[in-house]
Length: 499
Ligand code: CS2
Image (cartoon, rainbow, N blue to C red; front, side):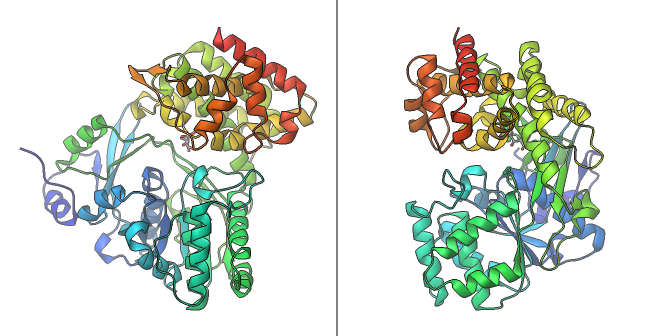
């Protein structure tokens, strides 16, 4: 007999009977919450991170105003998962030794832009909404090579035309991009309540708050007649930077089976996370916020050092292990880091190239941080795949790897391990791009918004492939591309990998 589906009703029924010790219900009564936070990008990551923290903060303070309206991206799939479950979902924490399941009830409403844009805009404008959080991935921000908003892209331009219509109260067409949705919501807020707002970027970008503030400014500069809105945003909307950290793999059938065995209910919205959790948030808010510091987050005046250390140590070694690991046929990050050759590359990357570019954030021992990161990667229970981490390299490597390269070159050093990582990406692109990469019995497709450009750029000899990628200005900064030392190191590494 199949188990019933998770919902408020079935959960209450289930909770009236004894539960395994490893299962916890929502920290607050979901039915008592009203929406005070809008989240753009309701994927797995935020469900295992920010939204859990928001619920714990509400539980710690007893405040009932921090329910969340979650907004999906391009597909209605997450809405289909969560709406029938009254927004309830489980977070399966997969440790090396123990697994536990926690239900979260902070999502009080779910919207899909293709259908519900009007409702999202109203929520962004409502004076009862104080905080907007975003996890839309690197590519979701639609940036150009110089980091500005790609206002020439068709979908961005269409959103900006709708932002112009919104100036006169006429703009309910479906939003196509997250920044477009946000900007239209800001225009509506300015036109209606004018209440202050805080917008919290939670993606892996350097100085992410400043980046998002710049994109919003670019958008408004491209909307004729929006000068008053721009001035209001400058005065009344804050964009704190944040560093977010938790490994959240894609949910598998095995995870579903494990959670269902614990709970006795089917949960289509289940997400999985490692035991580790970190969130460092710049304490720069325009108004009220959930008491995230009561729920494990660090509120600080300076996020930059944390952000840089995390991107350059964790995310850079993650990508390196993903590319080199997949090329060696390792399906998971845990298998890749268990390969002594690859662990040595990861350590060399951190020790030789990354650490000289970092200042330790308050009280952090960066060597211990490196070890803790590699230890987390070795957790076999998450099942995090190399192919998942390998996606979108053209969007990720500039942020996680090429800043390190630029800094080392500026200091007069050739970053050899970083060149190996870069060559690993090129080798992966070549193998996946021509259909010749098989991991775990499956042919891997190249998953990257620039895939066709990358395949073309990486054709030919090792020299030609490295030169082809170095010439892609939307990926590689000019100072890195101009270095003959880095080029030679990358060519040598690519030859080794190809051999
Ligand atoms: C990973 C990150 O998929 C990736 O590119 O490097 O998602 C990583 O798991 C998180 O940033 C950890 O906080």
